[in-house]
Image (tube, rainbow, N blue to C red; front, side, top):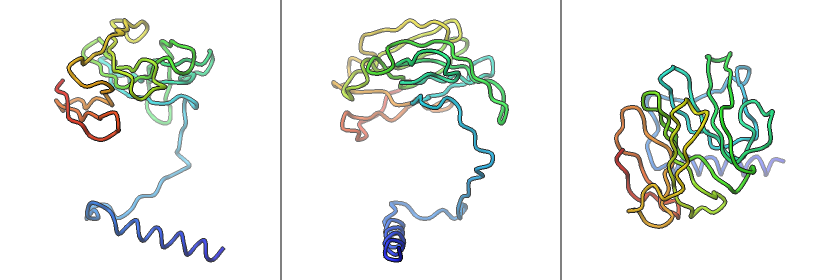
Length: 185
């Protein structure tokens, strides 16, 4: 037990020394209040978020049951989240696919009353391409484009999140997960 504790403390000290940036002069530490912790929609992943024109949050999710978990597992879906903590409410608006291997959401953005989503077809393969989708009815139905959203970029190029609302470029990632450039929106 004592040797395990000593090993853990040594490893922690070593990791702290190798940080690629200096310690923050403003933040000395952080403590989490576990009593206020909330968990919603267990079993679903991804969750890119955007604020809609109606003031609610919209979230896309993959490989799960969404917020309500009262339907079959889906590969991709969209949920509207309203309220404020601790009184959040979610309504699953749309879902598609067999629960895995069909699609994954990559990014979601609202512009006016229209939702735009980048999604990856057959996401079980990390080299799959990013496609686009649009919803003109608040996320209840989607027009899924199955073609490559950015044909000028190399094979395997994917969108990972959208910088909003004030940023005009987002980092792009290469298939080997290294930073590979940016795309202007």
